[in-house]
Image 1 (cartoon, one colour):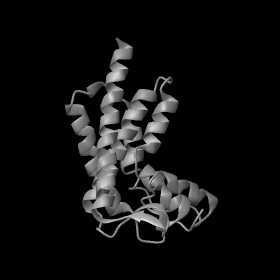
Image 2 (spheres, rainbow, N blue to C red):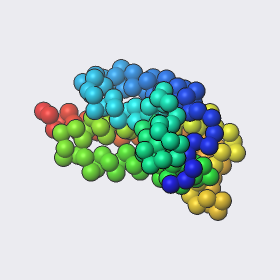
Image 3 (cartoon, one colour):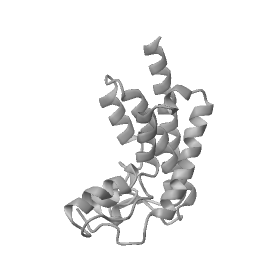
Image 4 (cartoon, rainbow, N blue to C red):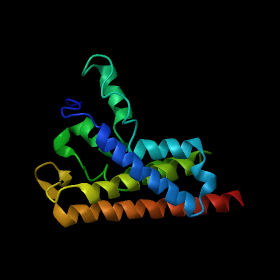
Length: 184
């Protein structure tokens, strides 16, 4: 793993992501998905994928120790694990900033009792994260395919994030419909 958290605390950015994520969870609730929004699995998945546990201290133990590095995966939201795995130059890696991870996890968890709420929570939380990133990032901020070789910037990058955010909302909605049919 690369050097972690070279910059200042994630708290302020994490708080903004959390508030935006809470608005998405509320919106999903208002769209009639009350039974899922109240489930722990749904809420935990939404938090992990929207803002993570940003309010915790930035590091534990000795800076850079294996415990500190493992802890960072709780401190960073799922979409930003690209920073932890590949370094800051890979931030907004196209796999972690798309519907790929929530869709794959949903497919893997479909037959498990918590699969639907976890899949919906990941989708709604990641959707809020991607759309917030699109709304707040600079036009120079890339979506990275291959670091310094294949990247998209500007409206293309913002469009990528918004389209994938909207697709994730559609995935959450579709998953709720499938879950309701299975329960009937």
